[in-house]
Image (cartoon, rainbow, N blue to C red):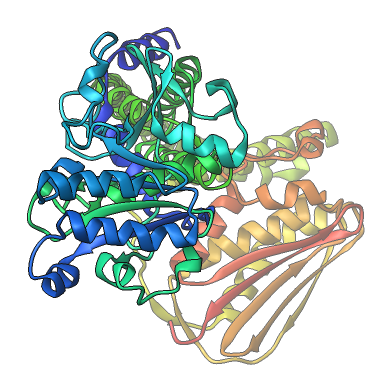
Length: 595
């Protein structure tokens, strides 16, 4: 967080006017066109006027033009070009100046901003010295701000004195002070604001020649401010670049003045976010970026940062459209870029270190696993030999039952049961080792499942008789299937022995086989203790034993069902269990006929 806030602070000290101007232009271009006040009109000396007059209008043409406008009683007529450019004799120019006085108001919007004490710069040469001249300069971003030559701002006042546009707007909206206008900001000795631009052509212009010859309805100019400009494409000084277009003749000066005046009349200048707000936003986005880079996966992080950029841009655009609030975007977006590309190498270093640690740890675990597997295999093999000797000696002793007392027989039966359990456990460990080393390969042969099941039941009869359990078989005739005899017998043996092991004395076990939908279905159902619902998903997990079984005196390794599931799935089959606690369990094996 400290680094992110420091980055935000440093970034906010850097001027990013060009980037910010691009985001402003984008927002302006992709928002609904702002309404006009209806109090502004434009008249152009265009090519058609020059063709009709066979050149630029002279002083007499301008005097005649003003006489026609005077009939409409406009609120003010503003020339957006210097009247000194008008051709004519001194007498004709004097007549033009006198004609301008019949209008309610006539001004020349000078592209000047004289310093205090130099107001004489706003005086025209005789005989035009009585024409009112007001400063109304263009403010293209040449040496400051975006430095791209685009006009985005206008000057509201200089050294405390308002320029022409606020004076004209005051007569419509009644606002007297600069504090009454939104978006006004200080810049050196001036007060400035941004223009609420409308696209070129929003103010439908009228031809100078048509007005002069009364070819238009002059009543449309009643009580309006009329900006008179040039649109002959002869020089770039009569045009500006706009946020909508970088062309040299993107918009005439007269239409620019119309946009400025309507911005003030409607009080719609965009309001910039403060420096504090900009820093807070930049800091928050920097913190988010650092958090995402350091804590989330790269793909998730990129998605979140992409969504953040899109969401931030959308919110800024919506605020600009609805409230006219200009939230700076350049610094927050740059913060995302810098924080991301600064912390990505750091994240890679951390990830590489973790990967190396995981590699070393995995290497060690692999070695330990190999040692464990080798140990289990050796131990199992070494145990089988003495175990076989014990079982052999038991058989010899048990053949001479008549020489044994009842207590000795019970002891020998206990030893026999223990050796049987140990043998089963060793077999399970050996099978587990074969599975983990991927040594098990199927030896498929055509086998009668019923025959295999009968062999398993016969083998388990002895265990069942000792608990008074009766094994009932319902084996339907069926075709032989290709199966690995040893593995399938282990599966069936495990299921039947488990049914015997976990069933109370004097109960029944049902073993059934049948064909269903192209599969052989084998079921082993008991009347034992059953399995709790929360334990059912784990019964086929390696070394898993339920709490009830662990607490009881029933032995086991927790590998039988795991091996059974593995062997069944090797045959592309499926094994599952259905059980109710206290009512028994039913294990079902499904093997494909066409395996």
